[in-house]
Image (cartoon, rainbow, N blue to C red; front, top):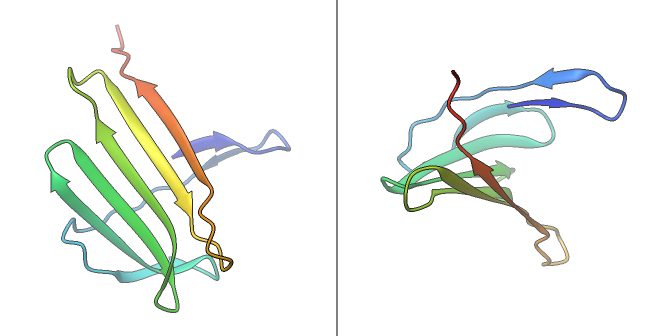
Length: 96
């Protein structure tokens, strides 16, 4: 991931995981201490972040028919039971 924060500083982060659905230790500080990755189909990749065995965040990435667009649903699971969710759609752009 790469992004520019509110102060204009560029940030990057990457991680890897085994797509078997098992939560494994993750060095996310107080944000997440374990992470699971699953691939329920050839067009879907899911990630969940946990802290002290409680799921705090989840992401579902789906490659849409045609293979040129991907939809990403990012959810935060709050203690009050609500789940604010961001939905984004990305379009594949080939470099020339």
